[in-house]
Amino acid sequence: MVFLKKLTRKKFWPIQIYRNLIIQISKNPFNVLGIETSCDDTGVAIVNSSRQIIYESIQLQHDIHEQNGGIVPSLAMKSHQIHLPRVINEALIGGKLDIVKDIDVIAVTRGPGLPGCLGIGLSAAKTLAAVLGKPLIGVHHMASHALTARLTHTELIPFPYLTILISGGHTLILVTNGINKHIQLGTTIDDSVGEAFDKIARLLKIPWLKGRGGGPGAALEQFAIGGKSDKFQIPIPMRKDQQRRKEMNFSFSGLKTCIQQLVQKQNLNLEDEQVKKDLAAGGVASNKSIRASLEKLANERYNIPLISPPSHLCTDNGVMIAWTGVERFREGLIDEYNIDHIPKWSIEDLSK
Image 1: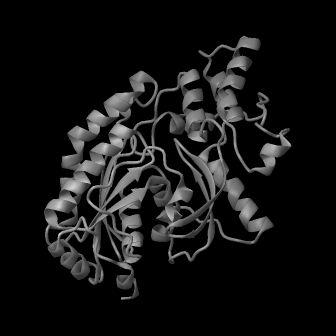
Image 2: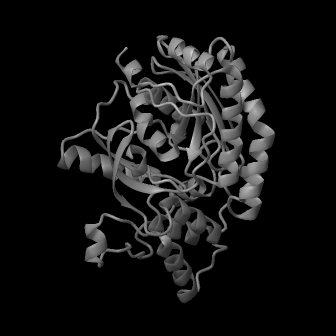
């Protein structure tokens, strides 16, 4: 295979492990175990090189964090410590795979994310890889989001393509030119859209939505369905700043402030459910409305398709990490067992 030429033996690897690597990388198909612990969800999945999700397991933490009004890093880290071994075991048992015989590569989120949470997943992955003599791949969290559609779409999407990432902690516009090549066109200068949604949900005292894909932002989106979007006027950030518009950046920190001021100036009663629904509808563009607007822009104005992964794979999960492991493994992009986590990590640094 062509990508075998890209591999050179690293000093940190014993010779036997390097031989095992060459044997494993030549297998077709091969299986990758992916571990995701960058924030509050403990996700593990097994994906193979034939673009098949063999099994996925996940442990959510909504019940832990809702009472605190947001993610508490120390509690998130403790939950990962408690649940990660079981979640890994569930994925292996569910996929009916033996970690020694059937898993060829270990992939794990290396960053960006919460330092303590990243450390839990990375330590587990490094230990498994080193003890079992498996190749280790450290994955950039946002790059894995950008590559997920190449797994879930009917056909493998060719490079390059425009990527719009809207998540709890990040908002990015990228041009994805390859596995390791992303050009950032724009980002948020303050809060991500997900953070803004979470803060507004907390302000309006909306209970978190339970289950996968839940939380405060999802609860706010669902709550807004019954509201009138034209009831209250919420300004669009940065419309008057020509320089910032030219840079293609976003700003969302003012949304909560605008709604807070609106409540105070008009003496709105937040005990009134309809008032809260109208505020939510006016101040929030839901995932569905964002997707509909993007689809209209792509199809009607530019005659290009809008491709999006299934909603349950748009939140943090082990599938995206395992798939990115597949992509990087094919390119010979293997890491040493002594890598560390990178809590703050620009996606453009991947190509350096």
